[in-house]
Amino acid sequence: MPTLERLSPRIGAFVHDIDLRGVSEEEISFIREALNAHLVVFFRNQTLDASALYQLGRQFGKPTPYPYVEGLKEFPEIVEVIKRPEDILNFGGVWHSDTAYLDKPAMAGLLYGVEVPEKGGDTLFTNMYAVYDSLSPGMQAYLATLSAVNDADNAAIAATRPADSRKGLIAEHPAVRVHPETGKSLLYVNRAHTTHFSGMTREESQELLSFLFERIEQPEFSYRFHWQPGSLAFWDNRACQHYPINDYHGSQRRMLRISLAGDKPRGHP
Image (tube, rainbow, N blue to C red; front, side, top):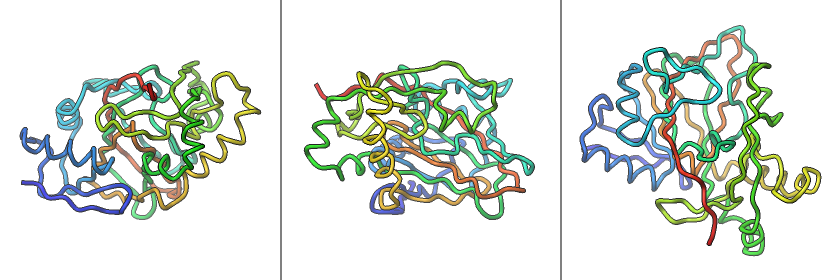
């Protein structure tokens, strides 16, 4: 039976004593419970290829293509995320929640380390329940009345993609989201995609969004994961955000990732 090692008071846990190439129903339930409790779970010393990663993902949801990276020929839902030694930018290199610009953003993501730099290339994950809980009751109540506009072509995230990758994807979601499984409230805006609040201009929204982005990025809400070859991170994209650190110029980092289809975010009744 797998064992769990909690990594920080806020977010993150290792799952030990498990081979992800053939998980049992009991192990699937164990991982689901750990994901709801810790928002992101990590595994070491796995030996996954694209087929095994796809089979793993489908145990937890519906694999879905990622809008901005072409998938593998055999498995279109799996994308190779690679930063070569000569590259300067890293894909998605800003705090974000995946695909917030879609009507139904991804439920979760799984990222597997194939090649990782000897030093650097860590990923930060942050707990959006904890960020919401840190706000005053008055701010929580006000944010619960707002909808946030999320734009795939927002400059903060577009700068990490090829210049010709604009797609015009925009979606509005509650600024305070209620998690469909836990029923808990969480803050649902992110620096990469959220441009303004519905019914307000960008200028009017800027001060409040800047305050929230700075709160999200405070280190007490996060955990920094150090990659090794054979590591896998499985995160609840509804309840946490992540940030891949771009501090390994001259080294190669090659990952495989798969997204799982989600539902339309809902706010308070």
